[in-house]
Amino acid sequence: MERPEFAQVSSGRERWSPGQRIARHRHRQAYAAIVLSGSYEECGSAGRFRVSPGDVLIHPPFDAHLDRFSSAGACILNLTLRASAGVPTLGRIEDPDEIARAAEHDLAAARESLHRQMRNVEALPLDWPDALALRLRTDPTCRLDAWASEQGLSRETLSRGFGRVFGITPTAFRAEAKVHQALALMSQGEEPLTSIALAAGFADQAHMARAVRSVTGEPPLRLRRSIGFKTEPPRG
Image 1 (cartoon, rainbow, N blue to C red):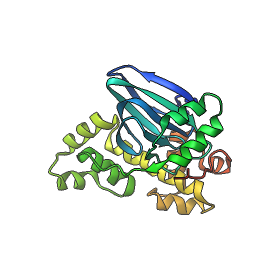
Image 2: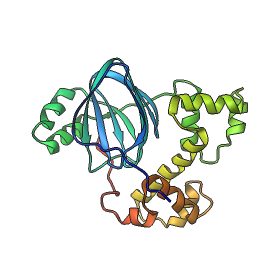
Image 3: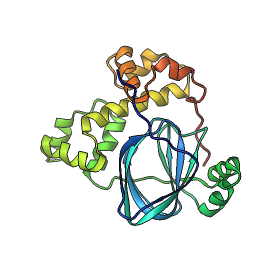
Image 4: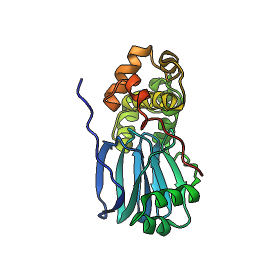
């Protein structure tokens, strides 16, 4: 089995050109993306978000997403994190410039300012691809043909429309959603891997191990032993 490739992320500012597109990619490192100016749309493991100045996207380890920048482009401050939520979280802060100034000389102070200011924001589904992504993240047993029929959509329309938004098929998205659910459960305690596999919708522990390795490059037991993988949620 090939090891997955990960895009690198480091703390600092990034500037993206108007209308720029970034193909779907995955990060091993947990990090926060703070919008300083401009706006963009991100579609990934946690759903679709349209963000503007003051918005924050917190990405857990192994998150995957694509980005579409607006006609104004965007300036983003990335902060690598030692702690992250179990799933990516949309938040809002009042003073992004305070964090940006702190990050120039003291990353710890910048992280503390982020945690102090962070207020969670609920992202509501924009349309049916968002609603399907939410369903697949929360119900690993969801049958795509049944869901399509409930919405009056053909299976082909479902696959094409979802793929245009998220850059991945609904079937593949559901498989990754199971992995992220398993990773969240593994990071929270010492529940047996067999129980986690069933809770996340896998047939058995071996099935979960193959899926986890395809996303992370590591077997579940090694991930569980990793100090860096076990994380606490950010305050706020």
